[in-house]
Image (cartoon, rainbow over all chains, first blue to last red; front, side, top):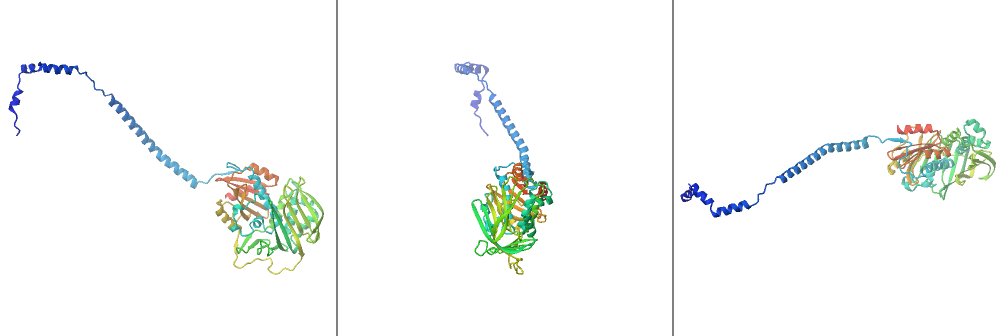
Length: 153
Length: 319
């Protein structure tokens, strides 16, 4: 068991007069004056409030993003799946008599000319060789069709 | 030659506006009627020179022709590019043998289609042609009558030289819009009523593979990345030929269908087509057109057949 220092304990047994005397001593008075000279600072909690506001704002933004993702992700998935279905399973619309692609100004005339040339040549050749047989000369299966240009006839 | 005669008469009939065929035939020169009738009956053999003008290039070849009524056999000289090839046609089929690949191409006959096509053109046609008949020069040692046919504007589009005794068309020239010869067929030698051998009008080559225009079409569709769009094999219009042709720098798949009523071209191009331009230019050439688009590709039907018929063909293609 710990042994207390009885002499120090006994020193604490001072009377009120002895305490007042000590407090009124010159040393105590100097310390009191120094303490009183220190300017009083009030503790500010404004920074904490600001921090809280920022934290609340961040949490709300995160929640909004989460909610947006929650809605957008399935929508994007559905949209993509829908587009895929349209591309794969739905027939492209057939548009008679419409033009929406780039075209050369002479294409229509050249198609007409191609048909007419084919008729004229076959009228003359009859049962004989037709024009593509004459031009290719040999097996059409070995001919480079990209070079076969009736459009310039 | 029978086909040529039919075609001539047909062209004549084609150009009488809103007039019945019988009336149009009354205006056809007698020499042409004779040629028309003789074409089904003539029996001859001969050598014929063919010339075709492709832009600046003149391409020519020689054919040995044997004809017995509706049957025809064509072979080619040994020194030419087409040596070994044989073409045999009867009322039902045209067969063409290619020795380099040991194949026989089978397709619809051409004669009847040509005849009926020109007959049809005569109905409702606006521009009446004009005929001019005069004595022609000797062709293959035979005196001829020359028939000149010009359109309503006076531009000559065809001349033919006909043997007035037999009705055989010995020479025929088609002219382009500039009045220059575009294609010429001319006999250099003719023998009437020759003796034909048995089997002259048959074509059987052992081991030769028989292919049809549909086989060729399938190859082109695959090779050229085109859509497999066309008429069914059961359709009254039969596929005569298929080819890939570059038109205005656009690769086009061209299918030609025929029957006894006429000829229809189906073009497939990856470019836009203006139907109004098509109809406008077609009208000038006495052609009807019908076009549509699907998946970035344009399809065009061209024919001398009525537009309603082209619409019906379009429906059959869709179905």
